[in-house]
Length: 182
Image 1 (cartoon, rainbow, N blue to C red):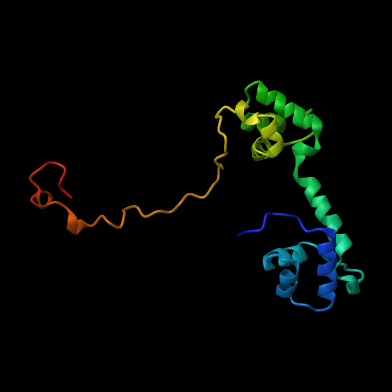
Image 2 (cartoon, helix red, strand yellow):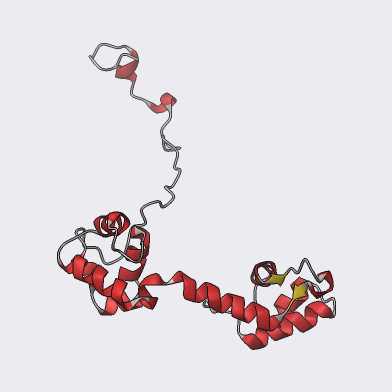
């Protein structure tokens, strides 16, 4: 069973930093924290400190990693951070605009202080905050769950495995009927 998605805490980052300085392998660090190895590797790669002036300071520093993660987290949810932009988007959704129209209008308005992608609007509409406000009902195509626009399509075989040319009826082979010509 998969563990629920949770962000690394400051204590976990402190453990990672101390174990990295002790030259403990990333696999053992992940096992000690009960996390996947890729989570630890990604954390170290994202928050590795590079200093050109003082190369001895290069490394993973837990306080720096925590502040960088906080900056990334605050940067990502534009509609949750900016109340005026959120109110404008909700107002236009109530007027019957689609997220694509809202994003396009914000892009060309010279007085608009912020730009927004239609995917950001969809993510907010289907987030917990959007679900409590029942924003999905305001969309032109009202769906409970979102069908992602650029989702990968399954690559099934064109012909099922059971269909074989050798199993076709005998009357097709004599070509007496229109449509049986190949």
